Structures are given as structure tokens and as C-alpha cells.
Amino acid sequence: MKRLVLQCLLLMLPISAHAWGDEGHEIVALIAWNYLDPSVRAKVSGLLADDTSRLTRDRDIASEATWADRYRDSDRDGDRSRYEATREWHFADIELGDREVDAACFAHPALPAGTYASAGPARACIVDKIEQFRRELPNANLPSAERLLALQFLLHLIGDLHQPLHLGDAHDRGGNDKRVEAAGYRAGSLHHYWDTVFVERLGENSSAVAAGLLAEVTPAQRREWRGGTPSGWALESFEVAKTVAYGELPEPDSLGRYRLSDAYVRDATAAVRLQLERAGVRLAQVLNAALGP
Image 1 (cartoon, rainbow, N blue to C red):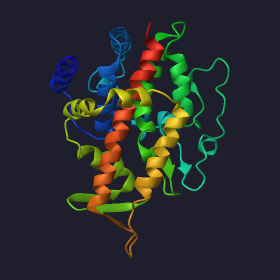
Image 2 (image 1 turned 180 degrees about the horizontal axis):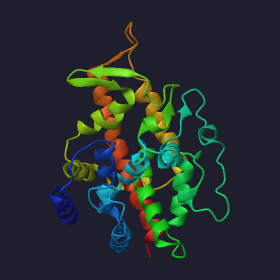
Image 3 (image 1 turned 135 degrees about the vertical axis):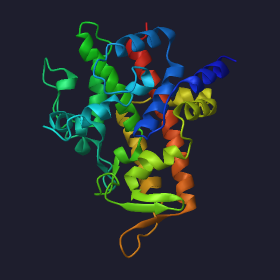
Image 4 (image 1 turned 90 degrees about the vertical axis):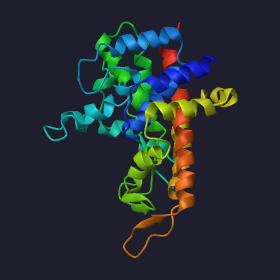
């Protein structure tokens, strides 16, 4: 009954649909919200209430899960300082042939002493940034503005960590250089299909999709998924990229384009579904550990 009430509340939230991208991040955040301790929900809401950036539609957890992309792109057509400082934090290009996290993470450069994670080096990967921000979040001695940034980045980056093409790479910029098409969908990059198309196949209302996915997560899955580390989760996403995103690709045509089969679309959608569920459970775990009693 409790879960049913929570799912009904999720369905009532006014969340618009975008992509993973926006829709996927909203779904992850809404799943996580369901698993947060009540005291942690209050702390998350309190921190997010201080966001004065106006980069998101609202200051609820689902909207704020999209903040890091908006922050990164907010000066992309200007001096590009935010873009250049944070764009590499969203992924780690683990090449299919070597499965090497350390190389994809620039050998894990240390955060200089006394430097906030939000001011850390531009050449840092998603795994290291998640570790840095989750160490900052529970530190009540830090300025509230830095803890807000830690929360905003965690809401987003843990979602990105579970997008397989943010981790797997075949010397094609995570699928951005591969042109694909499928029956009923406009042609686009392979990365775009995994960011957007396969998420939208789950439904175009983030609240409804999150409620449906919540109903599927079993207690055993939740216990399993809460374990591990960001580095391990990255390798898990990499394996999905290797076996499904790239592994099930057909041969390209004479122009180098890939025509995705119905089976590929079905398998990719199932993989995206699972990754969103994992991300929501793990985001809640990180926030409960950082902000819980």
C-alpha cells in the first residue's frame, strides 16, 4: 500500500519529458526519491531550495538532476569557461579493447589540497568526480554553496554513469560518430539513440515511467545494486556498451550507416530500463549514506 501511494504521488508530479538527456535523469531522480530516508528528503529539498541559478525548471529533485548539463552548456556559445571546465566530468571513454578505467580517468589526478571538487581540474572523469562530490556532501563545515554543487553534480553524474555510451567507446566518441536508424525513428547518432530514443520508448512522462520501474525493482535487486563502488558501476555500464550497444550492431551499409533491427531496439530498450533502475537505487544509496543520521 505504501508503494502504491508513493507511485500515485509520482504520477501527480508535473514532470515534462525530454531525454537521458532530461527524461532519463528525471526518472533516475524520481526512483531515488522513493528510496530516500525521510530525513534525507528534507535535507535534499533544503539544499536544492538554495539554487538561485535559474538553470532548471524547478528546484525539485527531478528538475535539479538536469542541472549539470545546463550548467555545462550555459556558456557554450560564449567564453566556454563552464563548458571546458566540466564537460569531461560526465563520462569516461573506456575503449572496448582494453577495459581500462585508469587510462580513461587520466590516471586519477588528485584533487589539490584545499580545492573544492567543483573547482577541480577539467581533466577528470566521471568516476573521480562522483567520489569527490560524495565526500563533500556530508561535510557540514563546507560552505552551503559547495554542498549544493556536490548534490547537483551527484544527482546528474550518477545517472550519466549508468548510460552505457558514457563509459564504452569504440574510437567513436561514445557512439557519437556512428550514424544509425531504425524503423519508425529518425536517423541519428548511436549515442543519441541510447540517450533519448530508447528512453522515450519506455514512455514520454518521466513520472509515469519512474512509477512503472519502481514497481519492477525487487528487494533482492535493491540489496544487490546498493553494493559496489562508482568504479565497479562504471565497468558494469561498460559491459552493457560492449555486449549490447556495440556488440549487437549490424554491419554498416556502403555509406557507413547502421540499420538497427527490431531485436536490437528491443534489447537496447531493456538494457536502458535496467540501467535506469540501477541508477535510481544507487543514487538513493549515495544520498542516504551522505545525509542520513
